[in-house]
Image (cartoon, rainbow, N blue to C red; front, side, top):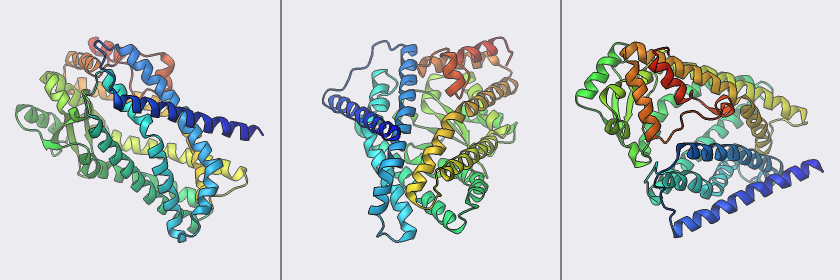
Length: 392
């Protein structure tokens, strides 16, 4: 009885939330909401926090409803499909349904919100094009992983968790190669950065053995006015990437500090640290979810059981996310220290963070609970204070 009531509440919440967002999206398409003349960073951050919490609740409720209400009927509907294709078809169907169900939510909470607060002037059709690409990529990846996982479980029904954990770092490493080379160029144009700035970045990178990396500029302004830079890639696919919004609005010494921070991630092997942490995190989720599935009297014998496994794993991931956030904040502080040592100019870093605060509409410091539970970066206030005092 309690379970049925909980599932009813979950389905009602998901349906009601989606209908409210659908109405808002339709109203916005008829009469687009205007941009705020002077958006407040604190209000913007509070709205985004609220939406994040609502998103966690909504995704948990939706996955629970799928796992315990809709999965078995869908499984029966696909029984005529050949066995090797049944699980990929099941997962592809769910991914497509979820993507279409969440389309108005993503429009309102992503596109419309950013336009209202002035952080983006991307058109609706351009946003829709990017979003549909994301759904298509997610569907393809989910179907491929489902086919692999189904084959693994059928061949090793008892030991598959250990095989899955063993192959996780390989898959994460491949993602670090595939994403920058093949996926990201589907959304933006990446071109070589040339001129004096590129030469200074190359000289800086060469000091730390990354002089071979491609130095690229991409049109981030196509989606947002926010600024960013990153160093990505492994196995010879290293790229130092700067957004056009960073290049056009930041002073040269500020850009070099930001690049030095990103180089710090690469030099300190943070991509590999992330792979190791991700593997450990996934291992904990896999083993705990598999144990919970077995305690419920089930095994991972069908795609429907896979949704129950995914539900349990998502709960583990939600509970464990503060640990990952804490590790990420420590890594970011280390990259700040690296940038100070590399440039010898902490004050340019402080200026860069102030400019990021203004351009990204970021608040100086959010609630302590939000930082501890969810933030992957230390507060801007604390980072600027450390840089100004050179105690990084």
